[in-house]
Image 1 (cartoon, helix red, strand yellow):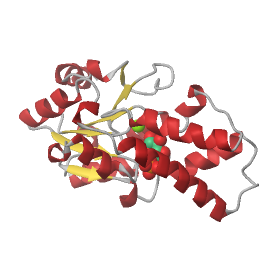
Image 2 (cartoon, protein in one colour):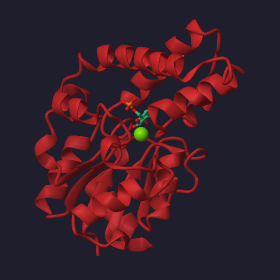
Image 3 (spheres, helix red, strand yellow):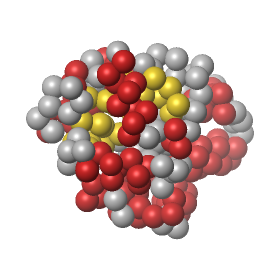
Length: 220
Ligand code: BG6
Ligand code: MG
């Protein structure tokens, strides 16, 4: 039985995954480090500081920075990111997402958010979709980051549903791994190869209809 759908935010509900990419890329270029979209797949779903560590390691600069310098770099990236999200409106919801949220509500399926971002509340506010969520778990509320299942398990607990009755929706490798580790049905949005661990994969959110996800869940 399907009791709840727990969504990742960045790259699933809205295309903030692209904003994170743009902001990291700018910071990396200032440090003389270049990275491509393939490398960026590894940053998706990963916390701010861990993302910075991975970029510095890519450029062989991990040992060159003090902790204070790393904090300053992470802060700089976030300032750039905040500028990008400040302009967001409800029009920035990805295709089909508003219909899906509405249909889940109509069908009495609970809705959760599991986001590694400290900016999650701001983004939800800009999109004006806060009322759809029965629970929101963000980076501030968990100790372990994805691929650890804690964030998805916390959302299920707050929704008072068994994880095996939940669908998790993710665009990140680390996120799909977290959903599977939580013993939930994993839906991946995006690249088939990058998200191959998912139980069901759609190329874009336009394919994420209520009927499609329910059919996929019960086929298992
Ligand atoms: C995740 C994104 O949702 O949040 C990552 O996929 C991002 O790219 C992480 O690094 C942390 O976000 P923030 O807003 O706290 O820096
Ligand atoms: Mg994501």
